Figure 1 (tube, rainbow, N blue to C red):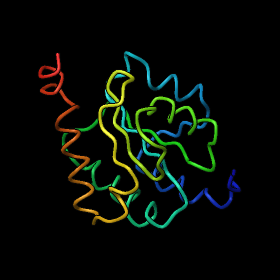
Figure 2 (tube, rainbow, N blue to C red; figure 1 turned 90 degrees about the vertical axis):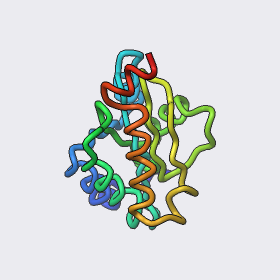
Figure 3 (cartoon, helix red, strand yellow; figure 1 turned 180 degrees about the horizontal axis):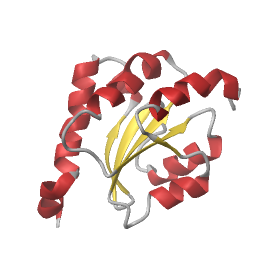
Figure 4 (cartoon, rainbow, N blue to C red; figure 1 turned 30 degrees about the vertical axis):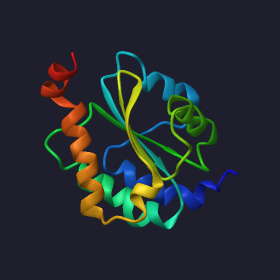
Length: 147
């Protein structure tokens, strides 16, 4: 089901104001998640209350952390239907979930925060899960540990 653009526009803009790159087509997703892409945080945005009350505000909070992914992007489940399906192909080891946040390294998923991790936690706790993943997988120290 595709939501009307006017209904999801404000929810898209909430992440765009943070500098989060929208990926609205499968081709844009593929271009972002290449084997040379570094680290990419992908937010699977949605219309539900836990996206509005937790996932999007927590993304803003986590992006204040000193260690960040190389790129931060989003797809909108129910808006960017084909792009969301493509992201989920990259996340084939995980059941579909929206909202959710995935962290990729060189085009491979390394961390997944599902809806059930989001809906029953407070913002600070969710942000901590994200920033711990940033510390583990992003930045120079992480590259040296993984290499």
